Image (cartoon, rainbow, N blue to C red; front, side, top):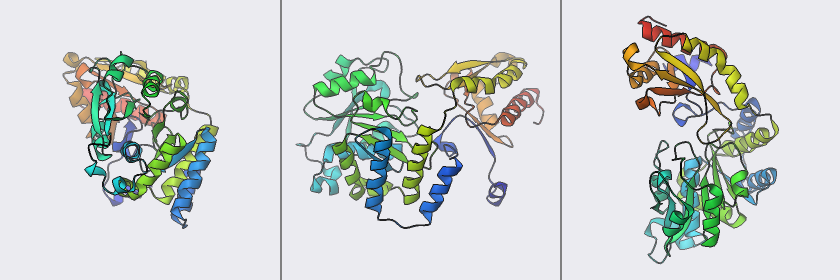
Length: 372
């Protein structure tokens, strides 16, 4: 409701950056909001709710086990803790006093040790683990991953994300093969990924998703995988998971979101192209600006608009353009990861056609010195 913006003096936002945590991620469907509201207004035996919804999700996705957590970051921390602690009651209450006899090293490709809004290593440390980087920033083969495994290794972690280095990095299936050869669990962080089963089918033991990104659920996360490992994740509700617990409304809302997600038709990349084409044409009419369609670097069926600025002709640095659009009367956010190259990307999934017209008008006004 518009009055919320007025009540708290909040700026209205056009989210052209995608499902990003800094903007509240996504807007759930009506059926999800209805279930969230039901959860808010009823009581449950929480352990029963966790177990029954987890079993329901596992059946929907044809996996061994599942549990709803508060977010994907919590999923990383609790998955790492679960692998280290297992069902040791003393360690559950004394996680950060892990004795040297307990393996706690988490091996991941160096190019996956990224900051996605918070550092991966921080989540691993929160779960009692110690990051061991395999390979180099620009490559990690199966052999290089295996070479980093020692008697202290507790698990292998793979970050499937556009934030990670993509070139010359082994695949999830190859990482799973290394994990099997060394009798280690493989944890895959697939927070923004859209396929809920492929990494499990490739051999991952625990797979972590954001509930609010592709699934468009409430703020939440999903951990699915092998039965025993997920049961150990559940035990974390009496350990570090207590500080990152998910409410009944989040559990029910995500369960509904998953059910809707797998039954409803998805917006295809081609549909995104059709939506952005008039926008691209309007941008290409501006001097010093060129726009084209690009596809998601992590291989998802997501099309975006790549905008390239001729900084010399425009008299604007790209980073300054990004900042100016954020600080206008309406806050317009883009994917600015490549601003240093004079490029930004527009994700149109959360933008209406009329908002795309507004964005184009704001660019035109910015470069002409007018008010949009």
